[in-house]
Image (cartoon, rainbow, N blue to C red):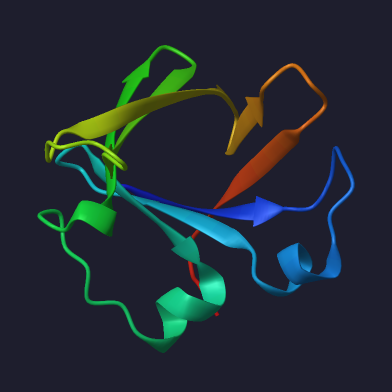
Length: 114
């Protein structure tokens, strides 16, 4: 495992539900990541890199991290997946996502989840 990053609550308004269930990213050395919540991950987690809901792939170039996620196509006749790419900036032990509309999310590297 390459690292675990937990959502921290600064930079914008967060509702109580978000604060009770912080989001996490778990990065693996083989280029895949898993996205979950701390409460779900600690309770049980059986997804692996071959699962559709695993998360996706990531790539780091200098201080930029790019995520590529695939979602099942809805409403179509095919089984093709739509793709979503999300970009963040790495600053020290933090990953910062900012979509430009004040919806900033910040994740901080942790050594343990408890």
